[in-house]
Image 1 (tube, rainbow, N blue to C red):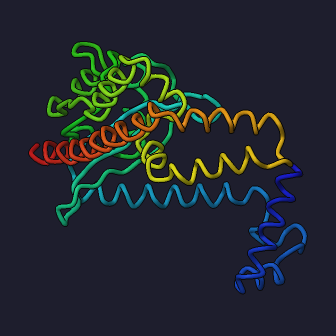
Image 2: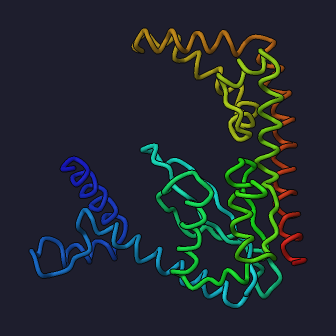
Length: 277
């Protein structure tokens, strides 16, 4: 903790060299002791983030009140400490006719059962005065506890409002198709283990192939570099120079580019569906 306090102190001092406002603030309020707020403490950023979060939620709720009708998006994701959290987002149409998707909050997941998730979602909507009567759509992934017709989250939300039509997450379905396609071929699976199935990573490998090879060569030829890194770099270099890897990069860059474009189109198509309701 003391280390990061020292790092923060040095960062603020560095910023002060280029920002007159920060420089004047430090000169006026820095090291004045207790009782004089300086907003320079190591924990003040948490208070500032909470204030910004509350301000953003107020703006979103104001927009939602004008739009009235909305769709609900819920998903779960682990954070950096591998703690599962529930993500709640809303979609609605602005007065200008432009669809808007707003992330609202991370909530510690109380469980993976549909009843538990339904209670969390309803408590959140009630605490923020978001009427469940105005929901016109809901979209989750295809896991049974979310999409189940009789006891899934979508059916429980629909029990509160029959107009909350469920639309399976097309992006999730598309990702499953891509994953199954990649896993069906051993060479493709090996390629993705080394390079990642993410479009951005594959696209970067395609565009920066020569640059990557040159940097790996520089590591291998660097006499001052540690042996373990030189061995790893040499292994990656040998792999990159194979015809198979080159073909995989070209092929999957094209395929994943199409997947990425389809996801954007599906995102816009869902908006049109929700507008019709």
